[in-house]
Amino acid sequence: MDLSAGVWESLRRVRERSPLVHNITNYVVMNNTANALLAVGASPAMVHAREEVADFAAISQALVVNIGTLSSHWVEGMHLAIQSARRSQVPWVLDPVGAGATRYRTTTAAELARQAPAVIRGNASEVLAVAGEAEATRGVDSTQSSEDSLEAARRLASSLGTVVAVTGRTDFITDGSRVVAVENGHPLMPRVTGMGCTASALVGAFLAVEPDAVLAAAQALTVLGIAGELAAEHSKGPGSLQLHLLDALYMLDEVTVRARARVR
Image (cartoon, rainbow, N blue to C red; front, side, top):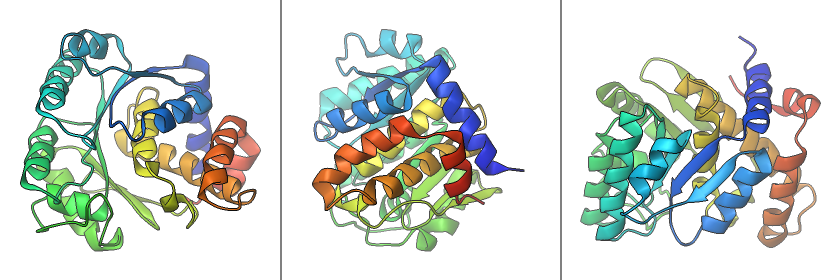
């Protein structure tokens, strides 16, 4: 299978269809993720109120739930949105930000993970925590490599019947049997806050046009990785990387995607 061709075809469909991606995400990254979704051609919505999340999830093409800045009201809204998405057969993504750091955060992530997300996207420490195989993390940063958590990711995907995407120097996406590795990206990217959250948002956009969740997650991560590489070529540091990343996402073309995609 030519995975790089699939990356381009899904990006082209995102641009053609402009899927509505409903995000319940954290205060830190709302602007970043909304602009990244716009740059790839999707239509972002940051909708959190308990009174409307169910209605909004039902009219969206994907839902992304990010637990970065938790509160009891937000968690209630997350559950309502997920229930609505599942009734409407809208695929949804869980980003268990900082799972393992506190009991409340870890418990919330585990509860949400049991509600049939199409994809769980996290760093190695977060995935290990959701899988019940890690005691603690250092805030929202990973203390493990993606390779260290691959087997735990496979077990978690199999037990929940979902796809788990572990991001790091190499990204691994698995449904418990298949494993796809994405080797695109740049060391400067983790210096920008919310890059993982942006990855989860893009996974939502690609799920809206690609029903195979393994492929959708791999394609989204490949696109972000390529854009990060291109942005880094023109950046002096993390501040300018943010600007160039949006331009790179917007300007990606078929020749560039096929030439630079490192997905296997």
